[in-house]
Image 1 (cartoon, rainbow, N blue to C red):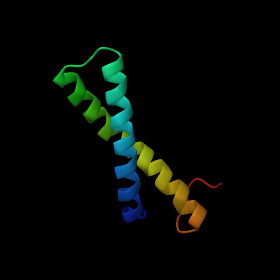
Image 2: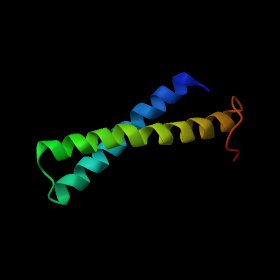
Image 3: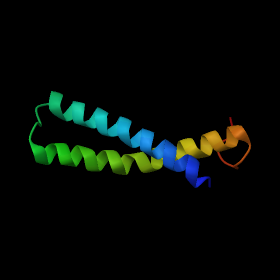
Length: 70
């Protein structure tokens, strides 16, 4: 696996997912600090499979990796 590509995709996915989860928590009324930390933790955890999926997808498009073919 291309770990450099994974680190870039993971950092973007984590940022997006954390932002979405924090906004969802604030809108739904969970606006205390522990709820925000839970949203941050979930964003970090959910970004791992998303990063792996999109790394394999981009790697298969560029021909550098076997994975999910387009």
